[in-house]
Image (cartoon, rainbow, N blue to C red; front, side):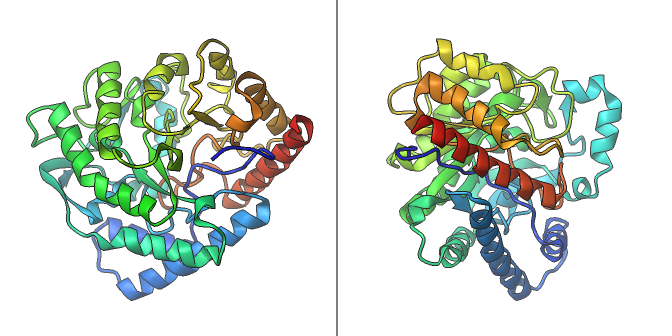
Length: 379
């Protein structure tokens, strides 16, 4: 997917869900009984509404808002076996340790109490093949005739699974990654075979440098290399042009003063067998990193999806600011190889909003308006 006639717009996946659906997702995450027929009906309605809202604000490449998922990576517990006891210490982050008042603020969000990471205690295996098919059905129905190649569905990478869920079963980190890759292959292939684009969410690639769960996954760059190798194994045989990889430094409102520079990661990320690379480029910590591509040559088969909207602040970007961010990348790598996106999602876990939902939608409108301005200058 390339911006052949104008700058295409999209986002990274998670969108604010209706309050009633959030409550049901919390109940499911807390392992309380939920009427599945009621849940599925609410998800279907939410997907239709979210797709329409994306269209209304001018987003070209839409998704289901991750409406059926408690969290972008923690939903796997319903679909895959192998995960048991919760991780007691949710996170060890350098920036939160340095500024504990930020940690207190984050932990005070009600949604956090429903976010459960778990230890891997037995073999990771697919236990329910149907939910991803239901996700596909909901999104297909909501598109109402729009080509499926203009839509995407999300899934976590093997590296993200091992990052979130400490290993208490496999003999090595590499074995754990391989097992996760083998299990996730089904979901990846099912999404692509259905005609949708696949977004692989892999915050671990950047976050391992400053943020760990439980016992952690070891050294940063060795994990990055092994995680990308495992991901490539999982997507082997799938067309790269239908896959986009999202990396970020954590969608939480922290100081982020210990984030690993993109320059240290990008050459590894470019080894992924995907066409599109999504990354943060709007927030104050990473906005300068468009400069990386002045020095790092982008391979001919790669496309950039920089975040041009900061999802961590309620300030709504002026469309001209968005256009300037797009133009920087277009000037360096060419207009056709830039798709305008967001730094991360607006609700990576159900009910967890860094900005009010109404502000999030206004920001997406600013994204589309800015892309229109940039397109007018580039074409």
